[in-house]
Length: 255
Ligand code: SF4
Ligand code: SF4
Image (cartoon, rainbow, N blue to C red; front, top):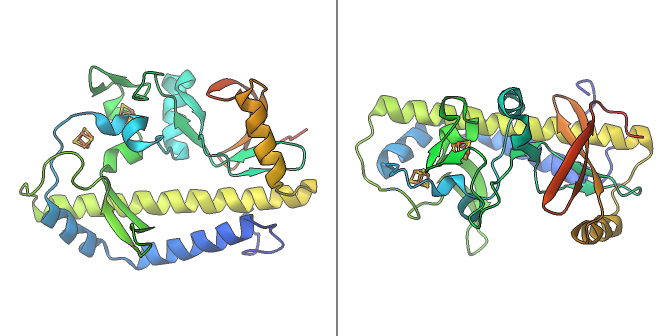
């Protein structure tokens, strides 16, 4: 896919998403880590180890880069499942997802599979997003719809503030955060380019009605096929609502 020209023949809505991701990546690269470090030092966030960030109730699912998923697969493969946000559905009812996340333990808070007694069981191997949290570098709309940068996730909803943070520490946090956000966008661009090419090669198109119908059937217990982007190809899963049954095929042979 590396030789694919930007946007060439990619079917909508992949094209608009891809264009948007390229724009986000350019904006991110133009944002200086020095500015982020200044904000980090000014805010002075301090973690009080409440562990709320390790629950879906507080934070949604854990976004994994391929390296994270590989590390987790090597130690506890059953902890992985496709991200819950399925992006597309083709005319045959097959869904497409950008990668993997960590299962929740199924408790009411949606605790991460690795959370035990409010501690991470894989702390030294925890995913990149868990390492940089709560720092982030996203452009998001506020309550009035004005799009601006957000640098601290859940500001004023967790932890304590105005702690002293050295310049060196703030710069390190800023560099790590920016590198992580860039890696996420590069992954999403690769996923969209690969999926676009895959759709072209297999004569596929995104069908909204199929998407809605399939999710309804899934909620009624019918398995759906999901192609998960991982390490430059697709892995095929069969899942039903809330339960990932099994990964059935490695590789990109669709049918
Ligand atoms: S991997 Fe560890 S740090 Fe990350 S969400 Fe799970 S328990 Fe929390
Ligand atoms: S980062 Fe925030 S939510 Fe997570 S454990 Fe620390 S204070 Fe709690």
